[in-house]
Image 1 (cartoon, rainbow, N blue to C red):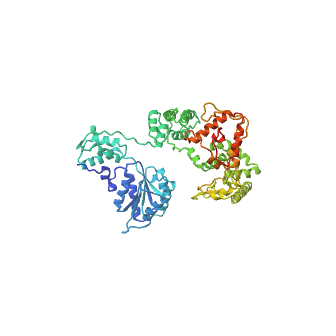
Image 2 (spheres, rainbow, N blue to C red; image 1 turned 90 degrees about the vertical axis):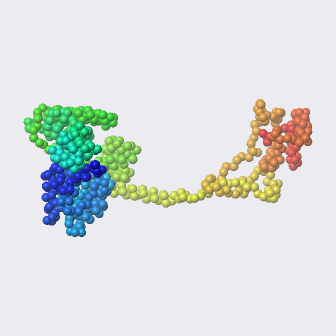
Image 3 (cartoon, rainbow, N blue to C red; image 1 turned 120 degrees about the vertical axis):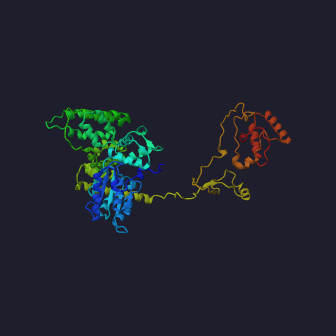
Length: 605
C-alpha cells in the first residue's frame, strides 16, 4: 500500500552520495564545506544555480547532514526584507552554536528578491556575507537575477539538467522500495519525458503507479514537458543553422516577447555575419527582414492585435536564419541589447525631461506629450533672455537641475545661478503678498459649528389694549418701524426681507370687462367712472377683513338679510344712473355695521 506522502519528499537524498547527477558540482560543494572546518575561507558564501528540480536544495541539506551542521533556511514563502534577513540570518551568521559547531544558512530562490515585500534584501545579503562567521548557501535558478556585488563575493557552482541515463537507476530503486514492478521501457519513457527535471520524473512515476502493482510502457500517459529555452541557445540555433522550423520552435520556447527578441537579433546580426572581406550582403538581407518584422510589431502596438506577433516572429527568426549565404564557423559571444543599457543610463535625464514637460503642460494647459514634443524647445529659447528667464523659472517652479537641462548647460554657471536665485526671491515675494492678503481677510465660519443663526423678521402684534389705543392715532397702513421679533431657525439668512405691497396700492383698470361664463362674473356692469373706495386709509387690513360680509354662495343667509338683499337689488335696478351716490353714502356710515350692498366691491373678488 502506497504512502500518502509525495515520493519526491520521501526519497529526498540524505547525503551528498545519494544526489543523482551533477557529480562535479557536488564535489566542488563538498570541497568548499571542508574549507570551513579549518577556518574561514576566502569565499564565505556559495551560489548553487541551475534549472528547477535538479537537486540544488537537496544537495544543500545533504551537505548539512554530512557535515553535521545546523540549518536555518529562508525561502520564497518567507518575508525577506532587510530587517528580517539581518534579524534571522545576520544573528545566525555572527554567533556560534551552543556546542561550538557550524550553522548553515540557506537562502532559497535568492534571485526572486523583488517588490516591497523583499525591499532591501539583496543589499542586506551582501553585507551579511562580507562579515559572516557561518557558511551561507544561496540557491537561484538564474544567476543573473543576483546583483553583481553578490556574485563577486560568492563562489558560483552550476548544476545542470539530470540526464535520462542517470535517472533510470534511481527510478527503479524507488519502484523497488514501493513494491511496484516497472518495465525498463516505462522507466525510460518517464525519464525522457521529464526533460532533465528529476523531481518531475519522480512525480510522474508516482502518478502512473498509483493503484497498480505493475507498470508498463502503455500505462504512461504523461507527455513531454515544456522546457523554457535559453536565449543564448536560441541565438545559436538562429545564427548557426539554416533550419527555419527548428529556429522558430526555439523562439517559441523562449520566455521573451517578440518585441524583446527583435532587439537581441538586431544587436547580434552584424556581429555574427561580419566578413573579413567587408561584404555586407548577408547583413543587408537580414536587416531587410527585421524591418518588415518591425512593421508588424508597430501594428500590434497601434491596433492591440497580438495575433500579428506570429508574422513578426517568423520574419525576424526565419529571415535572420536564411539570410546568410554561407556558414559562419567559430563561436562569437552573444551580446545583450545595447538599447536597454542606454535606456538605463539615460533614465534619470528622461525622467527630468518628463518632469519639465509636465510643468510646462500645467502652465500652458497642454498635455505632457504635446509639451514634450512641441513646447520644450520653445521654452528653451525663452530662457536665453535673462529678463524673461527669471519670471519663467518662477512661474514654472523649475529647480536648478531642470534649469540646466533646458539651457543645455553641463554645469552650473554664474548666469544660471543668478537666474535661479532671482526666481526664488520672486517666489518668496509673491508668497509674502499672498500671506498678507489672507491675514486681513475675514475669517470664514468654522465648518464644525453645530448651529448657525437664522434671522427672519416676524411681525408679532401688540397686546389688545395697546392696539385699541393706537388705532385712532394711526389710521393708515402699518408703520415700517413697528417692533419686530427675531425667529432663530439655525441658519443664516438676510436680515431684511422685501416688504410686500399692500392691497390698497393695487389699481383696477379704468374699463374692466367681465369674463363670460365665469363663476365670479358680475350680473351688472361696473360703472364707467367712479371713485374706488380706499378702505385701507380708514382701517387696517385685518379689521376690514373681519368686518367684510361673507358672500360665499355655500353659506346660508338669514331671512332678514335675504329681504334686505332683494330690496337692494330692486333699488339698484330702478336707479341705474346713480351708482356712485350709493357707494359714497355707504362710505359715510363706516362706523356702523356694514349693510347688504347691491353692488360687488373689490373685496368680492
